[in-house]
Length: 106
Image (tube, rainbow, N blue to C red; front, side):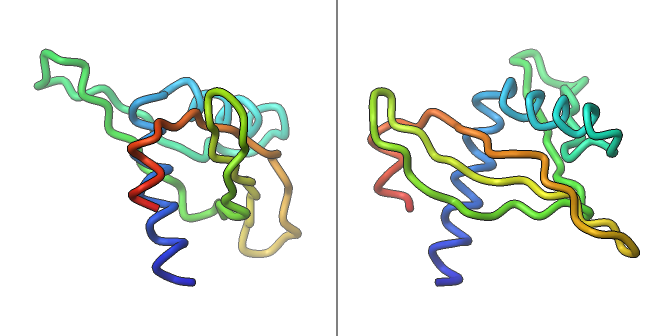
């Protein structure tokens, strides 16, 4: 199970880099709940090809990875804010379009 979750997380991060708008959607949901952003999104100042660096916050839990059938295929996941001394807050479910080649990586 750890291998599957690890593969799903790596695929998730590669899709977020490719589809930055999903990371922006997650951060928007965080702002709507008055929580800090889940992702720190930075454009590399040294790159001419819009290299994006995304770092997930340790205060968030990403879980419930699944595949949503349809066209295009999508990977779904849930985001929860988990502060140290308070109850978790659900940010919601998010979808990332994936290609057929990505399925082999899971």
